[in-house]
Structure formats: C-alpha cells, structure tokens
Length: 567
Image (cartoon, rainbow, N blue to C red):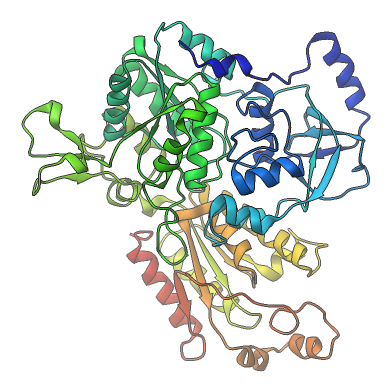
C-alpha cells in the first residue's frame, strides 16, 4: 500500500499541443541561465518530488519556512526552494522569463509575480545553523543572486539526463514500480556514498524490521564537495543490488537532488521527498546529511539531532523513522549473522572495527591498499579502486594566498621546479598571469575579484581531477571565496598562507603599487583600502621574513611527502 500522499503529487509539465505553442513563445522571451542547483530544484518541482510546492517560493513562503519550517498556509516544509537571480533588463513584475540550463537548453517559463531581496544571512543561520565558511552553503551562497523571483511555473522540458536512464524514475514511476511489489510498507534509504558492508546490513535489517520493500534511493545531483562521483557510486549500487539484495523486495532508483548538507532540517526534507516517492518509512543513521566538522574542528550537528527532529514530525509527515546507532564489525564473532551490530548493543570490552569515509580513503584507497572484506564487498572495492588511484597518483592543488608582495610567486616558482624534479606534472597559475589571459577585462571590485578566483579554482579543479599538480598563487583576499575554491577539490586542496606583514610587503614593492594606492591613484587595493581576510585553518603558514623562498618551498615539499602525495 503506497502512501496516500502519492495521490496529491503535482506534475508541472506542459502537455501536448499546448507545449509546442509554449515552446515557440518562450524563444522570444528574455531568459536566464540556471545554476546546477536550480536545475535540480526545477526538475524535482516539475515531477512532484517537492509536493505540495508548485513553484519557487514567494517571500511569505520563504519567511514561514525559515522561521517555522512551514509554508504560508502552515503546511510542513523544512527547506527553502527559491530561484535566486541578479537584476537584468528583462526582469520585470508581471513579465514571463524563460529558464535555461548551462547549455542554453530551454526548460521552463516563469511569470515574475514577485521579485524580492532575500536575507542570505538569516537563511544560513536558520537552515544550516551556522555562518561558518567551511559549510558548503556558506561558501556558495555569496554567489547566488541578490533577488528571488516567484510566480506560476510552466515546465516545457525536463533536464536532459543521458546516463543511467533506466534508473531515473520520477515519483509517479517509482510509486508505480513499488505498487508492483504488493507490500504495505516501503522503507527508503538516502545515500550519497558508496554502500559498504555496514550500510548493506543496516538497509537489510530495516526492510526486515518494517516487513516490506527497500527503496535504495541514492542522490545523483549535488552532494558534498569531495564526495565520490555519482557515476562510480551508481556502478557500485547496481553491482550490489543485482547480487546481494533480494530483487523481489528491493528497488534501486536515482534522485537528482541538490543537497544542502543541512543536517536535521535536511533529514526532515529527505523524508518528505521520499514520502512523495511512495515511502512509508525512512532510514536515518547518525549524522544524517552533515558536512562533517567546522573550521574549529567540531561537528556541525549533534549526531542524533536529525532522527530526533524527524521523529517529532513523523505523524504529520506520514513517514515513520527507522533509526540505527553506529553499525560496527565484530571481528571475533564466530557466527556470521552476528558480525555486524549497533555499537550500543555490543558487549563491553568486545573488539570492534568501525567504518568511516576518512578511513576508507586514508587507510586504504589513498595508499593503494585493497579494502578488506569486512568493510566492502569485492565488487565495491574493485570499482572504487579503479576510480581512486593511490595518493601519489592523485592530483593536488597548492593554493598560495597572501598580500601582494608577500612572496607567493617567488616560493611558487621554486616549488614548481622541485616538484618537477620529483616527477610531478605541474601547472602554475599565477594571479598576474591569469588576469592577463583567463580574467582579462575584470576589474578589482569584490564581485570581479571573486569571479577571478572562482575561474582559477575551476581550472585548478579540472587539473586536479585529471591527476595533475597545480600551484595557484593569487592574493585571493576573501575567506568565503577561497573556501568555495576548496570545495571544488576538497581533500586534494592545500591552503598555504604566506604570512608577511603589510609593512614588509610595502618595502618589497618595486612596482610602487602600494605607494600609488596610498596616494589614491589605485582604488580597492588589498591591504590599503580593501580588506584581506586571513585564513583561519590553512594547512600551512609560511614566514618569508625569517625564511627564504627556497626554504619555504622545501617545507611545502616535506608537507606533501608527509601527506602521501610524493613517493
């Protein structure tokens, strides 16, 4: 029996002949290109995954969701779904706007009944619970548009999804497949990581506990920066579901969701979405949808906060919580059925092995060591090994930041040669050179500076993704923008703060830039009339007053060797 909420789903796709006419009209409208986040949101709005939401939120709905997790009509909805834009000539109240993806393909038309400035700081505090720049939302939100628009939405085309098409089921298609199992209870499992043995055990126990069908429902939209790419993950899900799960009681489907990594609120939102896909139960483990630790080394959320919040609203939501404590492996157990257990149920003094993403990556994959059988099935281990070479073969970004004249470029140039001597392929992206080519025409306003740094970050991330070493030497004065660049590469990003006092930088300034800035001839010069935000958690801090550029380069080399990036 599928949840009665399934009958209330909204489908915003314009049908048949009406669609053909609408497509013709839409091509004459002013248009905006959506971010990947907004494309994901649009797709799930269109297919009813966000029911009862019918469009991007207006100001009243946004305020209600931020303050009380409820739409203006009091319906429970924990996550803001808005369409951020910057003003442009075609943005006018009452006018229609075409919405396009990054390839300029037409997706939808929205009538701008509301255009309102939105409170980004309040959004961060209410949704993420923190303004910490290490939170993915905090790093990203500064580049969202200043305004939100809302109004009637007509979806003309869903985003083109070429890969894994047989698994990309809409809510209606998923409910139809689930109905075929003829089971009363459906338990859904949210995942953005490969499924290891403890996850397998947990999901099987959950299906057994509710006496129903398991919906394996991994996210293939935007997840935490640095996560295993979804192509690799889906390959592991297919291998496991085919061989180790009961096909008569398991459905694998993909969810094109843009996660917010917002912990408890996100867990409640995930449960609501799975309700729309037909689930009656939802699995919540420890630290659900958490981005990990903040800039002070502390967890963003209490590990049990998510399950407590979802339980609070479970009856109203129509989805019951199936929760588990941390699942561990008991290596000394003789009975195979008792090899995995919740930590809270393990006898005192028993030897246990625990799973963590850090351990999977750091102790095994990054060192080229095979994953042990207790941790992963051989199929998962093989796929992950194929797509995750040892750290000596991975790409890495060395991001030098500091004031103009601090010694970034001098150290970077020497480091490049030392790395090449060690056999590394190295690209140097120097701030001045980049502005001559990649960022020609940009000025020195905050917006232009951010654009410049994000361009450098994007190029660097592509080099890292393909196994190269890239050294970036740019002032990059703003903490949030540097963190956004970090998020493009996550575990393969090393921030190096060249901590040289301003007065020393001015003494070294052979070009006279500081002097010109002091005279007012150059505006928005970092350190004079524009701020420099020092890194709070840089991996390395270099002193260029008491140490030479060569000595500092050798320090960085030693750090890389210690982190496993050099043989």
